Length: 275
Image 1 (spheres, rainbow, N blue to C red):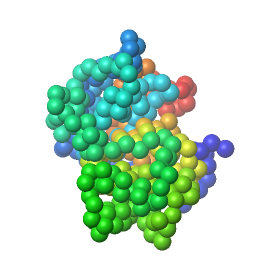
Image 2 (image 1 turned 60 degrees about the horizontal axis):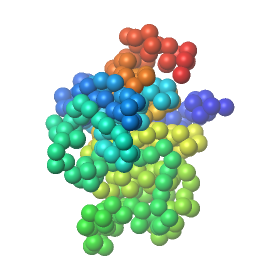
Image 3 (image 1 turned 60 degrees about the vertical axis):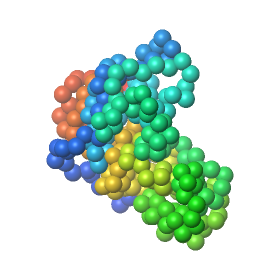
């Protein structure tokens, strides 16, 4: 049984359908003709999209279409890959993330990232969450304790681990580990959270909890979500962009894109004719 089918079988655990949202007045992330090259290979072709603050924007499309590459452009994680080039303009709050003098450490503090596979450190739950604050100079025990509790509550994990904070994070279940990684990201006070297929390694129940969490977190953070799961995009996002062969084919409010796609390629993909 597929993950999507499994979720449909447990409706009590699935996230609420995202209701239509009013047009947002504030653009948080704005890409204008962004292109990205691995050596001479062009992976992104003229990507232009505006993503509003305090909304979830899902990036969908077949494997290898550029979704994750674009996601990593936002906080310059691609800088860690040799022989890569980025062109065009990518703004966060009006500032070009590739502009001269941009501090990538500060940028990645503002723009956190949650990866496909949970990656907790081999340390206690407490030390995982307060790792970032400690790196940024927080030393007072009471402050660290407050950050840990607040972050775990925001990640909907506090009640499950509050009596186990000194236990190894590696003893948690996969879904708990992913929520711990979200708490670790939240602990440094980001404005944007990038999620690269955060549920692909999780079982259906853990996936539903992450989707519920994403739905709640958009009240405080701008979220960009890469997913291959069409039902997940419908459940958890406000806006959806469909990528294909390094380009954006269509972007729209999620319900509109899935119910009334404007492009034939979009309709073919979401209906399962390809991809």
